[in-house]
View (cartoon, rainbow, N blue to C red):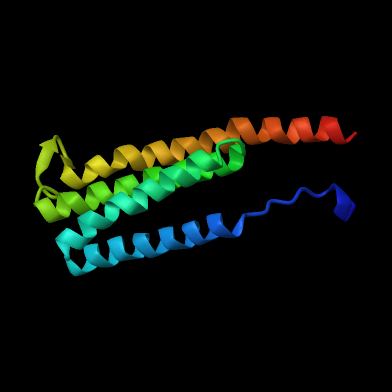
Length: 136
């Protein structure tokens, strides 16, 4: 394949700075969780999740980016739910059968995994097929 046939994905500098700030908020959230700094940990959920949603929305026209960014939104949601369950003390409380409060985080974790499964099992093969037919 010639270099001219390769697609290029570029990120505007302002958008990249927002993505980097998102990482700072995410790390602050997780450090706060680790250190049991409840107010800061819970407060960091809002900017971390909001920026993740904004990034997913902004990249919605690129199926691969959308799928991966939605998985990140679900991952942050799951981690946040797990953190809250520990902070509130219901992480080890049985809710139903063998499922505890922290197992509620499985809902967004599985949603993220299913999003990526759909992308790689259904959407990506369609993209590859379409790319083959348009480059011939």
